[in-house]
Length: 195
Image 1 (spheres, one colour):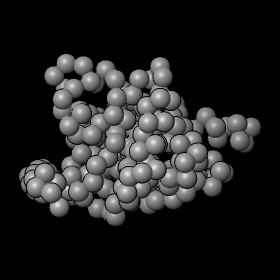
Image 2 (cartoon, helix red, strand yellow; image 1 turned 90 degrees about the horizontal axis):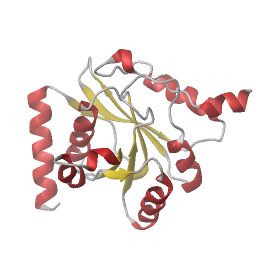
Image 3 (cartoon, helix red, strand yellow; image 1 turned 45 degrees about the vertical axis):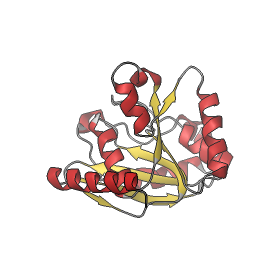
Image 4 (tube, one colour; image 1 turned 180 degrees about the vertical axis):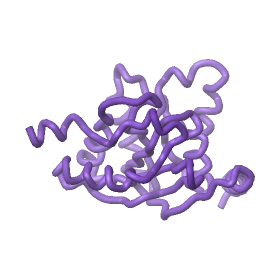
């Protein structure tokens, strides 16, 4: 373990202890991390602490506006990846090329797409998993129990409704910092499949 990782892990463990948060679950070696519920900027902080506590680097897709001004160096240092929503394909292709060569590769996506309440999740995580063969890992935080962690890892079956039922079941008892802003796990593709 390099000194850099050792310092980050110890810092994460100290901050988690001081804030009375705990981490749970088993970190995957490769996969698409779907983090929820996403209702606050604190979600990002806890995701970083979870990664550092487990000595992994999550390539977290973050909208490009966060890379302007004083936040930019912090975002880059944390492993965040700038995503221009007008042309996401180029960023995704570069990251997926890395996934083929890196021993560990964790791409983090907030499928809710916003901290505000919405009607649907964004389906990019599902499509990327299907196209690359990378499994989906459900990452979560639960504010009432002060827990952040890794949930189950699975490969999508192609039955979008069944896969999303599994995701809904897992997140049903997870509560974000602002529960009223939670978007229920649901994809537009489910309606097309059942429609």
